[in-house]
Image (cartoon, rainbow, N blue to C red; front, top):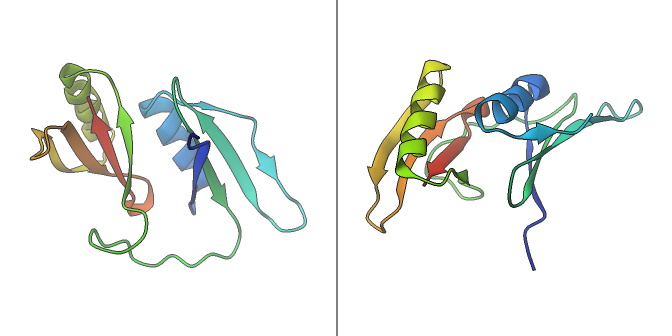
Amino acid sequence: MKIEHVAMYVNDLDTAKEFFVSLLGGVSNQGYHNEKTGFSSYFISFEDGARLEIMSKPEMEDDPKTPNRTGYSHIAFSVGSREKVDELTEKIILSGYKVISGPRTTGDGYYESCIVAIENNQIEITE
């Protein structure tokens, strides 16, 4: 069994798509839009592993995303080396996103950085 895809609702679908494509190397499909409901989505594919579905619709709740809450915490992307973690973290900083930890070696041995990205959702960059 494998995870086929993870989905997240966002308010600004095009900005989210641009983030995952331009900064994280994803490839987007052409998108889907349901005229009747207003629902729109893109599937973002990555070099290896599960896909990410980003979705939006006209009326959504947008509760605050505190770091210590129940539910999904973050999405982690492995880039293959410590050097690539450092390089991508710097690129993300230069793009205006906030790094909340790292790059660093965690207590359980991962080399990673954690950023607050699309609409206050956390993304980890790991080696």
